[in-house]
Amino acid sequence: MVDLLSEQFRREPFAAYAMLREKSPLFHEAQTGLWMIFDYDGVKRVLTEWETFSSRHGPVDWLVFMDPPRQAKLRALISKAFTPKSVANLEPRIQGLSRSLLDPLMSRTEMDLAEEYSIRLPMMVIAELLGIPTEDLPKFVEWSNAILNMSYTVGARDGWQEALNVFTAATSEMDAYLAGVLQENAKQPRDNLLTRLAAAQMDGERLTHQDILAFFQALLVAGQETTTNLINNAILCFLESPEALARVRSDLSLLPGAIEETLRYRSPLQWMYRKATRDVELHGQTIRSGQLVLAMIGSANRDSKQFERADEFDITREPNPHIAFGNGIHFCLGAPLARLEARIALTDLLTRFKALELAIVGAWEPRRALQVHGPTRLPIRFTT
Ligand code: HEM
Image 1: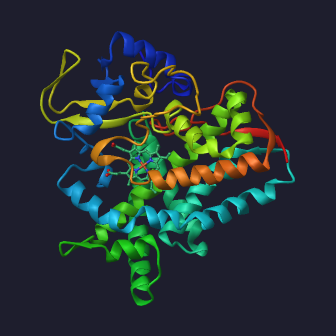
Image 2: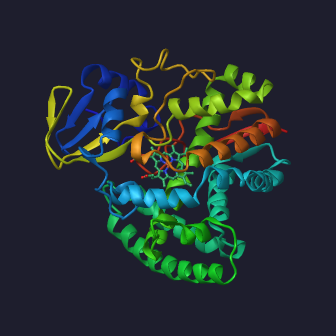
Image 3: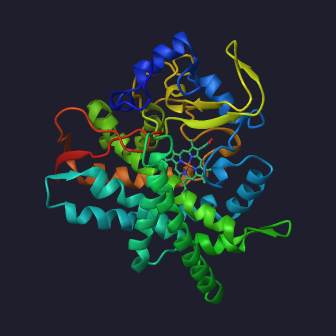
């Protein structure tokens, strides 16, 4: 009934979501045995009630695929190193990185915003955050690709085994590299996230080398693909809604609200998985213990029972209780960084490039990662 993998659905799933919310907010897909939950209250419940809906189903040992008590302990330790202040301190550096990407484009009239900017900026920011020296960036890109490639193929029809092999090889390289960097940092302390992760302590406990490696890998996925899509999707929303674009251009203080509305309207992550730990009743049906549930964040954020004029892109929407960053114990640790990056990126893009318009004919191609919503390429035409 719904082909989650079709290009058409992945580009514009919202009408299908609305129909499903209306007819069967909890939907059982017979072929795969998957459950999907579409309404705001239901999605929030599945994301939040971790004792019933476990996150332990991923192929890797990352925070996001753990349950308490381990998740709570690790998250508390990581939060000591990855503080809102450490993120706010990155502002001038992110501005510098954004400028270094945009300066060479100023003499042009067209670019692929995804390839030439929105993919690169988050990658450079994560490297900066971790304290990866510039000469090691090519390695960093290679590892990111190995990890991203694995995330693209999770649930895909083929390519999974090969991606897993490449990922395993990259993991050993990362392991050796991290050991070296941590040793260097210990000899000559520098202020970056890796140093702070190694130093973080709570009740006499520290993060192990293995914990730090797992977090390092998780950041490469969590911090890049999502933020890339937030920037691209904001531009898409502006181009679809010229009136909103004109308002933001004339008053940049409206930008944070416009970013929140982009998160709601075209959520970069459309769904997260959970696994039922017991038989549980929801919307009059029984999900059996062990069955997988997709919490459809992208649909919850368009639920008209929660949001007035849910299908309208309203940059002054207030309040805007979207759940694009999740909800409850797994709420996105990188939300302050994503918001900061998007604000810097969009301020730069809107002030430097005038008369923005799409330079593609027809529909945009969705990105490869199945959970992610946004364009693979975003060719735009502009004046400066
Ligand atoms: C627009 C950008 C982003 C979006 C939409 C997003 C979305 C999410 C969502 C929905 C979750 C919850 C997953 C769940 O409940 O299973 C999450 C968790 C997480 N995010 Fe983000 N994220 C973004 C950017 C980032 C960035 C920039 C970082 C780090 C630099 C990051 C790091 C994390 C981590 C570590 C978790 C796991 C937290 C835990 O399990 O306790 N995210 N994110």
